[in-house]
Length: 150
Image 1 (cartoon, rainbow, N blue to C red):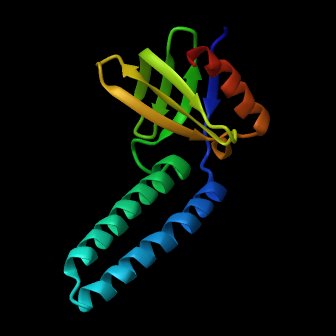
Image 2: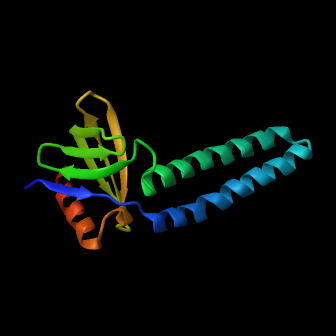
Image 3: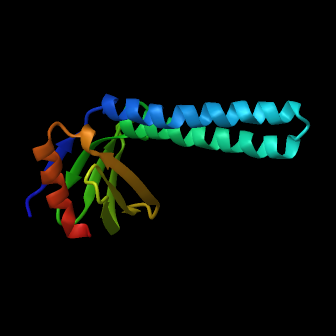
C-alpha cells in the first residue's frame, strides 16, 4: 500500500446540523432547570443543569474541534501508510499512531473513527466526518486505505 495524504477542510454544513441538534436540547434542559429551581425542586434542577452543561460541552467540542477545526487539538491532515497513521493537528503538532491502531466506520458512511497509541505511549482518538474531505471520491479513498486497520 502506498502512502496516502489527505488534507481536511472545515465542514460548515455539518456544524450547522450539529448546532441544530445540540442547541435546542441545551436550551430546553437549562430552561426547565430554571423552572424547577423556582418551584423549590432544587435537586432535580441541579441534575438538569448538569445535563445541560454536559451536552453544551460535548456539542461545543464536536462543533469547534471536529467540524470547524478551530481548536488547537483539531486534526487538519491525515497521512496513512502501512506502518502507521500520522495526523496533523492545528497547533502544528504531528501525532503518529503506531501501535494498536484501529479503524471504526459507521453504518451510514458519514464518519469514521481512528484510535491508537502514539509514540509517547498516550492513547489517542479522532473522529473524521465526510464533509471534511474535498469530495466523496477522496473520502472513499481514505476509507479504503484505512481498512487495513479494521
